Image 1 (cartoon, one colour):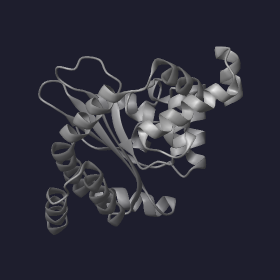
Image 2 (cartoon, one colour; image 1 turned 90 degrees about the vertical axis):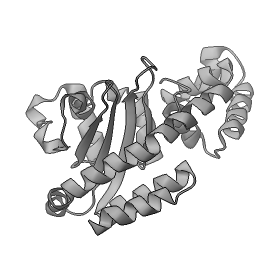
Image 3 (cartoon, one colour; image 1 turned 90 degrees about the horizontal axis):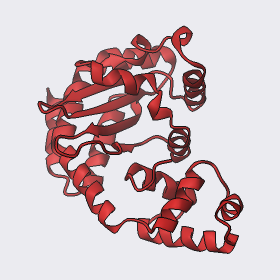
Image 4 (cartoon, helix red, strand yellow; image 1 turned 135 degrees about the vertical axis):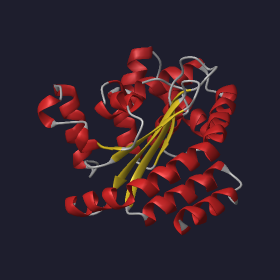
Length: 243
C-alpha cells in the first residue's frame, strides 16, 4: 500500500514529536478526517496515571470536555478497552441508551460537528492500552463513506503511529512533570479549568485578582503559551492539573 509506505517514510524522517504529529495530521486529512485524538491510558510499570493525550480538537472543546469530566462517562472511552478492532461510534452509542450527562456530551459535541467517528483501540501485551479516534469531514453520507473506505488503512496508520511516537509522547510528558507548576499555579489553573473567572478564583482563595493574574502570567511563560485557554488545555493534557 503506497499510502502507508509514504506515511512511514515521512514519519521516520520527522525529527521531533511535533513534526511527527504534523505528518500524522496531514495523512489522516488526506484520507478525509478533520479531527483526531490520541490517548494512552494504561502503561506497564506506571500504575494509575492521568491519560496522556494529544488532539486536534478546538481548544475550547478540550477544556470543556476536561472541566465537565466527560472522559469518565464517555461511552467511547468506556467501550474502547473492551474492543480489539476498530469500531464506528454509531455501533456503540445509541441515543435511547444514553444517560442525561452522556446526552449532554453528545449534544455539545454535535454542535461542533463532532458527531460521527471511529475508534481504533490499541492493546499491548502487558496490559497497555491506547486509542486513536478519527472524525471524518463532509456531509453525514460522505462521513460514512470515508469511514468505510478508509477503515483498514486508518487502522494500519494508527498502529504504526502509536508504535513510532507513543514512547516519545510519554517521555515528553514525564519531562514536563519534572518542571511542573507551583502548588499555587496548579490550584489557580484547576479552578479556571472548572470555569471560574480570575475574580471568582481570587474570592475563593482570598487573594487579590492581581495576584491571580500574576500567577497565570507566570504559568503561561513556563508552558510557552499566550492564551489562558491554551494554558489550561496544555496543563490538563500534560497531567499537571486534574479539573
